[in-house]
Each structure stands twice: as structure tokens, then as C-alpha cells.
Image (tube, helix red, strand yellow):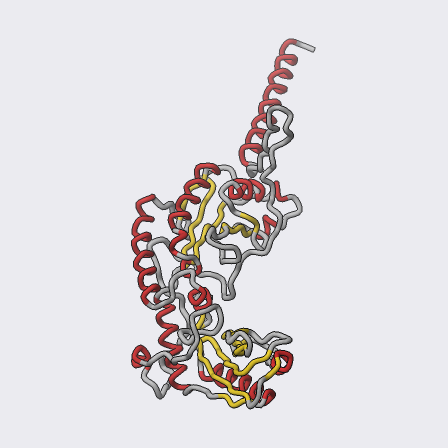
Length: 381
């Protein structure tokens, strides 16, 4: 082999090695970031607990449709589909002056005249819990509205859901005036009446139904208030360079207190005040990436951090917590905070939202529908 041929062979080999090395570097650089196992503690104490994918647990949730994503700076109402052209014998503008029905019922997790239509039922004789349970309708909804029947326990003199082995001297049935599906309408009210009448006939009770037109008008006014004060905020965290794997997202979110939600690709930050409450914040990413056969090879370019304002008490300072979490995740994962259109958000863009939320909280408090309360969680569901 001549010197020229040897030189060309060496140069070709070097070029080939360079190409392979460059492709390997590029592949590693663009590969999704993976969760990093924790180092073993010194002194032989054994490995530190790994922040692998948390065990699936039931997420504190609430009924209703999926939250509508709002761009920062907006606290707009959800479209509830109210038909303003529908004829109605009661002027909806007069609904504000309509008195809330008076009942000898204290505020509690059950039926409440503030957001429920309530129909008292007086049986001829004391009714056993077993008989009441047998007479209950098979479904607990009238249209899209929650429906419930409570009994006045003869022994405790407390309203409760009928239970076996108990005795009840009176009953009351209720249907919710509004939720995120809209206001109670005439058809749903009629379905409520039919179900209550069937229950009353089964236990030999006389129901006392309120006026349908007044209750429907009250429902529309409450629905309008809820629409004007319903805020669901969502922000996007986008990767600056390398994508993230599901395990990498879970590891970094787990360090901030997030746990697995009820669905793949969903993590939640539990409320700190009490167990069983809706989550403080929700973090979501591509479900397909979470369900992939090899999640480490799934590339996630962005995640969504959201807050359902009415579901979380203001004492939790959920928006301040959201800002802290967003900053911590951006710093740890080399991400950037964006609006829902993917436009980067400066820190100053978040300040006006804080002031808007404080005003919203005050307005909800003034209506006895404080954010995070039982009634607010029912209404905004």
C-alpha cells in the first residue's frame, strides 16, 4: 500500500469516527431527560429512597367537566349555555330580591337553601331507614343536577342521608340550583318533582314543592353569579432544549409534594388543611407519554400547571404556591413559564392576577360561597 493510500485510509477512518461521535453526542443531547437515582447514603445506611413514580392513589376530586384553560390576566366566566331568549314568567333581574327559602337547617355538608331547591316531606308516621332506602329513586341526579333526600333522625334530631336501623320523623328532598353544566331548568325541575312524588307515595308522605318559576329564576341568577366568578387558571411550562421523560417530570414534581393523580399523566399537590379536599394544584402532561411501553423514551416538551380557584380556600394561598412551584420546576428542569399559546411570561405579568384573585375571593365571601367551602365546591363543579 502506498503512502497516499495509507494517508487516505487514516483520514477516512478519522472522519468516520468523528461522524459517529457527533451523532452519539447529538442523540444524547436531544434524548429526553430521565429521572436520576439518589446516591447511597454514607456510612452504609443503605440507599436513599428513590423518587420514582409514586404509587397510584385516589385523587381528591370533584364532579364536573374539564377545566377551561384561561390565559394569564384573564378571570373570565365559563360559558354555561344559558338561553337568554327563553320566555319566563318571572323577570330574572328580580331574582336578586327573591328571598332565600327559610328552613330550620344549619349550614352543613348536606342540602342548603342557598344553592338547593328544597321540598319538605311530612310522612303520616315515623319511617324506618330501611323503608326509606327501599323507596329512594335509583339515580341521584335530575338531569345534570345533583339530587338528594335527607331524613330527620328521630333520635338525634339531625338531618342525614337515610341509613338502615334508624327512624325518621320527616324528610326533605333537594336538587342543586346550578353547577358548571348550567342553571336548573324547567325540565330538570319537573324531573325532580316526579322523583320526589314517587318517594313520597312510597312512604305515605305529603310533599310541599316550591314554585317552579321562582326557583328556576333563582337558579338562573345564581348561575350568572357563578359564571361571573368562576376562575380556572392554567399555565404551560416548556422545555428550553432537551425534552423530559415522564419519570423526570414525576421526580422533580415529587420533590415539591406532588403525588400521582387518578389518571395517567396527572399529578396533584394535595391540600394542606385537611385530607379528602380537592387538590391545591394539578400538573398534567401527555397521557400517551405516560402510557408508553418505554416511558424513558417518551419525549415531553411541555407540561400544564393549573389551579381551580373556587375549589381551594384562600388561606392556602394557592396562586402564590403555583408561582413558587412554577419557578422551582423551571429552574430544576431548564424550562420556561408560558401562557397557553406558548408565549413566555415575565414575572411581572403574574402580579395583576394576584390582585384580581383577591377581589374575586372577597366577592365569593360576600355571597357566603367562600372559595374552598362545601357550597362553593358543589356550585363550581
